[in-house]
Image 1 (tube, helix red, strand yellow):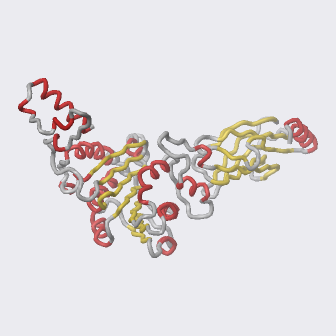
Image 2: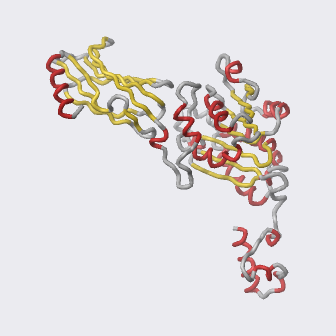
Image 3: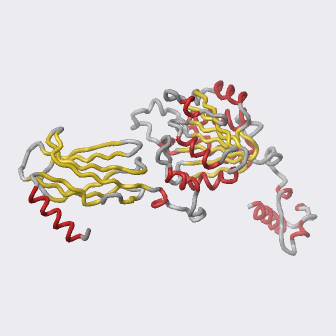
Length: 388
């Protein structure tokens, strides 16, 4: 319908109706971005000025719904923004003129949120991501919630496990939707162990199958982890999306890192909770010690470089850290493959250096103490450059 015709139709509707309300923006079945508020506009009309008249907006998706009302002031266009970050899939928007609980006029539109429309793709990422593709088509299954930028991080660091026999531990099962995602992504050779502190009714019956087991326990309880570790094979992938409480994240890591298989990946999500202002947060007591994991993560960087740790629980395994990747709200710790890694602080840097070019072979037999001071400095610079 052309704009002038739309205005003409709306004008006659207003003349013929005592009260009316209609959506101008968005239009029905519009596709909208996922990362921002949605700008909206409705046209509302009433022949009478009633003190209790209100404009009410109701927002519904498969995951949740919310509504709000504002006093009707005068006929005309009304502009507002809707926070849609926590909604997904098809969203139904209803605008109504109400007198108390009595709906006098209403109009409804549906909009569709697709992650691929508004995903901010890093320069290193492929435009096609199977996790994003799954997410956009997952409309009928179990609920799962993720930050949009996590999908490219998952795919970057986990894609080499796809199609292979592997074992994934996810801390924080919630409604179970993420378990469906991992099964679709990794394929039929994936084994899943899920851990949650607060099961919903019938969780095990709904989520467990021949390759999925659910454990109920406290993330902060070392005895719980000891029992779990003794009952299942080593994990190839561990994803901590559980309590988001620092001391609990730390306990889980110290209990589970030694049980991560060589070449494995350990992920901790939602690091932003470690930076909450505890003095202002209403659950300050619950979040006491929240920064423990963030601070421990900084220490792991030193231990990765030296292979040494004062942490007795990690004494035999901290040298197996291959790399630590820090992203916004998200960190990944990689473990060396079998037979690789450091053993204590390495003093003999020459044992790890490699060279290229005409001069490189000649350096292999040169002893640093036989060189003059300027040459020794040059050799050290060569070692450091090669290691970098």
